[in-house]
Length: 309
Image 1 (tube, rainbow, N blue to C red):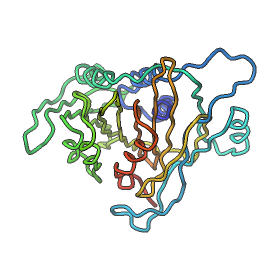
Image 2 (cartoon, rainbow, N blue to C red; image 1 turned 60 degrees about the horizontal axis):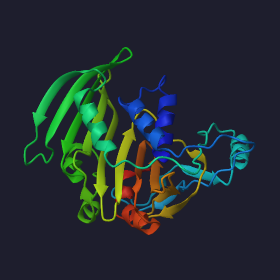
Image 3 (cartoon, one colour; image 1 turned 90 degrees about the vertical axis):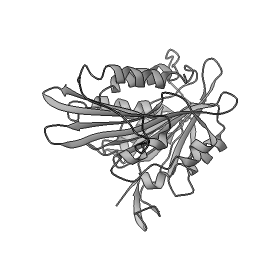
């Protein structure tokens, strides 16, 4: 799945670029929900993953009229043999592909609130440096800051909690994330809405920030949406995947990779992703049809979140 793939990339690069605290835990949680592969017998053939993004697409977005949209180009293939041949031909050092076979565990709507609570109570073994209650004007309900170490480097992390994702919008020094349509059509799951940052205290530079929230609708529909910025590196230009999926160009000109599959229990899972410069946006869950996922993507304001040249 795309979220897991991106986080695994972060783990692989930890020696050159320290990852945000809690990634290991989130990786493990994502891994548990990945479809499980059957034992290998001869050549493996998997279903095709979702994904394609356009590189250098002209888009009109707030502050980016006539600019060139930066998006990762995803190459997807019918089987592993084709993928490996394409990667060999590329020679540009693109990210290795990953595989999504049939099966897998169900999406757990309760896991996000649990992860948020665990991080709130124990952030990397750090020391609580500040706690505040939000006001009506703030929108958010409470915040907590920690001081902790990554190797020899001191860091500070901040987490803000809110009842709604939109209540966190004023915290980012940059374009906001328009989730008004999302909140109008779906209910927010309690304990899921968080804004999270990490700052290198030696340089004073913000290295990571992220918004995340969980939503639910009728008939068991449940999903998480997250938008993160990784300021210590940029997303690769090319990705190689073997999986089953489609790509969809939103009304504001952003290409979204969408993957759908059935878990071992019969649950219908999906995820969707966009990678642009330092930004990664993804949505994962259960209970939505393809058209509903596309409609959500149309109303996420993705063009305003992407980066341009």
